[in-house]
Amino acid sequence: MVNIHEPGSLEGRLEQWPVLATAGALEVRLAETEAEVEQAQRLRYHVFYEEMAAVPSPEMRDARRDFDKFDEVCDHLLVVDRSAHDEDGQPLVVGTYRLTRDVDAARAGGFYTAGEFDMSRMLKAFAGQKLLELGRSCVLKTYRNRTTTMQLLWKGLMAYVARFDIDLMFGCASFPGIDPDALAMPLSYLHHYAAMPEDVKVSARPELYVSMARIPKDAIDQKEGMRTLPPLLKGYLRAGCRIGDGAVIDRQFSTTDVFIYFPMSGLDPRYKSRFGLTS
Image (cartoon, rainbow, N blue to C red; front, side):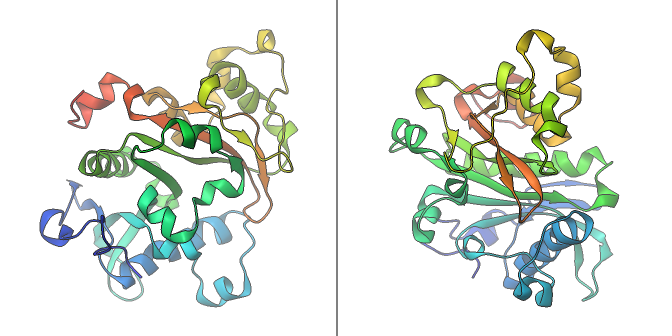
């Protein structure tokens, strides 16, 4: 089910938001139909299960789509290439974000991220404010070297944030692989130089907690630490994101996950200017 006309959602967005931004043949917009949500799920399946090492359920393997209960309550941000088409002859979806607001998560019994991280302190601090969980971000491999693809995703995301007056974005960012020692430099860099404020700190759930402090702070070159991060996570940090305490090994997706904390009050002014947001 596409979350179009639920109370408090993007009612009427077909008229208001036909396209959020364009760059050549690429455009970014929200999924408006079941078919478009399924296109996003097929892209996720291709990237996570075929290109990477995630393990699908039998139902996912049969459908060749990545899906769960959260897909029914959230919004799906899409980057579409109108000059290319999928096997059904539809414009090709080449990038996606799953966007879950607090009002939507309530319908699903909570946020997806709560399965890995204890967010109770943060949620208490932001009680009554507007929250947005980011998830399932991916871009088709042949479009990843095009900066316009990620720029469009960001423009669409910031338009969504402005439309709903979001106070806080959060979610998981993932490193490929499940050996934290192989990720010692990026994990340690994040732990020592990008930690969340103590009063709102989110930690990995105790039974899943993996220490990120694998290298002493004085043994880390900050430029090298930043260089080892995935591009999306670099972008988050540069825009003002901070990281929770402890990593989680996600064996289904064969990734090591960290928590991202992104209060809109901390958004770098350069990004506000770039995306037309007011202070």
